[in-house]
Length: 490
Ligand code: SF4
Image 1 (cartoon, helix red, strand yellow):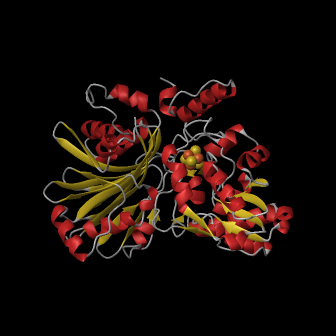
Image 2 (tube, helix red, strand yellow; image 1 turned 180 degrees about the vertical axis):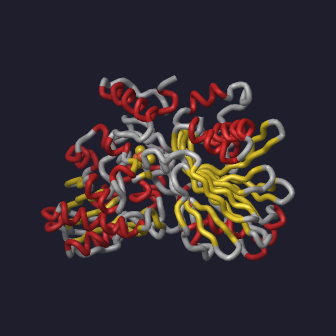
Image 3 (cartoon, rainbow, N blue to C red; image 1 turned 90 degrees about the vertical axis):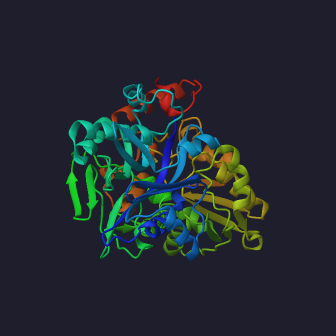
């Protein structure tokens, strides 16, 4: 079984111009959301698609003209993908590259999906006959089958989206195309993953993050509401609340790590939230801040927080850690076996800027601890006499069931150890997490509108909560955690 962490895009040009350049740039701006594969699908008298592994390639003007011959039409969708559990062998990655197309009794549907289905076992049972013989298919297949069934039974997109929202537990932000070229998008009733909408004179675009709109010269119009369906045709944009918005539960981790700083969530630039995270840490841990000669940041997700810390405390911010620009993988969304090598190569330390100093380091999160351990080791080797860590995301104590690659309690250093023990384990002088209440205040959102499952143990959907509780009990009993979260309750 494969789950996803992805960026989605969809766009329609009512003047009839080919849409591919919008899809290309919109997804290129979101390549940080998934680097394992990318795909485009347009509609002109039928579906035209291109899917491939790896990052979206650079394309020049001539290249765009060539791609337009492959992907013609005024409407299309696209996806960048990272699989957060299950098979990551090349055949599985190729098979599950999105957008994917499914067909039922002559009706076809194509979707690009960001999120993770929690009740996969139930859905696999429901579609056992239809999917017989198909191995290692992704959550997106189940979601698409559910929608096709809803289309057959209800007859329209609203019924199909409602059918998904009522029968699928999990996080899903979807952009899709019907078999006759209508663009649609919807978001699960909790709004766990981001999805937004914008339009210029001719083009309406749907994007995981607002940066995907901006790169095409489109301003953010609004977020797609939890439980809302958006349909875009030549006649215009129709929006319908097809399922009641349950408890809103936007992924808090988007603010700390996943999203680009120039994206906007809930009317606030992510970089401003990160800036406030840093100021909060400086204020909260002022005793330690007073000891520091310099504050550093792990590039680039912690840079804005380091600036906030510096503004609050007056400790000089030195960008003495630099990224090798073309080592593009994000360490956290990289498989364990690759991670160590990438970490070693990813960050370069300006040794003379840290030698003999008491340094503070701001990072966005500690998940397994290996990233942080590598960086602390490198700082010590460069001559830092003290290393104090300041972490913008509160201590992660539980897995994620909604598409972020944190699968078991055992792998999470914060589930096993106290901050003092973590400091010792990582070779740091101290580890200082931002408290949950400070974090929430900086996002500008209400606590009850955020998913904070991995830092509180309280998940917004019932099956996820049940899984978490059972897994936690087994973990506390010292039982080995068998495989991925989705296999646990078989
Ligand atoms: S459990 Fe954590 S990572 Fe997963 S959706 Fe909730 S806040 Fe985000």
